[in-house]
Length: 237
Image (cartoon, rainbow, N blue to C red):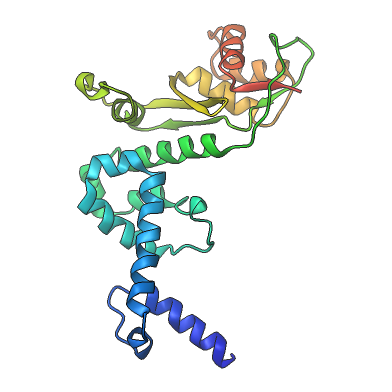
C-alpha cells in the first residue's frame, strides 16, 4: 500500500475515533476538521429523522448519532443519502427496549424522506381500466409495522397531534404518497398493504386483485384499488 493510501486510511480512522490519540490527531487543524465532520453527520441524521430527535431529545440524539457514525460512517459527500441503516441500528441498541416503537418511528421518518426526494411523475388521469397495467408511483412508500408507530409518528408530525395521543398497542400500516412537493401520510389496513405489495411487481389489475383477495377473500378489492389510485399511490402505464 502506498504511503498516501496509508495516510488516508489512518486519517479517516482518526476522524471517526472517539478519542484520537495517534500522531495524525496532532496535525494542525485536525480538531476543526473532525468536529466539522461529526457535526455534519449529526445534522444529516437530525434532518432525516426529526421524529426520533423529538422523542429522545437533543442530548441523547447527538450521542446516538455519534455512535451510529462510528459504526456506519458516511461513504458519500452527499449527506442526504446518509442514514439509511439508522432504524436497524436503533433496533439493535439495548437501551431501545424502553422505546420499542423507536426503530419503527425511524423507518417512517426515512420513508417520508424517500417519498419527498423521489423523482417526479404525473399519473394518468381517470380511473384504472380493466385491461391496464399498474405500478406504484415512484414516490409511494409503505410499510407494515409491529408497533403503533404510525399513530405516534403522526401525533408528533401533525399540529396538536400530541393532545390526543393514546395509541392501542397493535400492528399498523403506513402509506406515504406525494402530490407535487407535499408528502401525504396515512394509516392503511392489512388489505391495502397486501394490495400495494401485489402492485410492486407491476402486474395486470386482475393479477393484483387475485393476489389480494387470495389473502383477504372478504375484502372489497375494487374499492381498495380505487382508493389507492385516487391517493396517488398507483399509476397506469
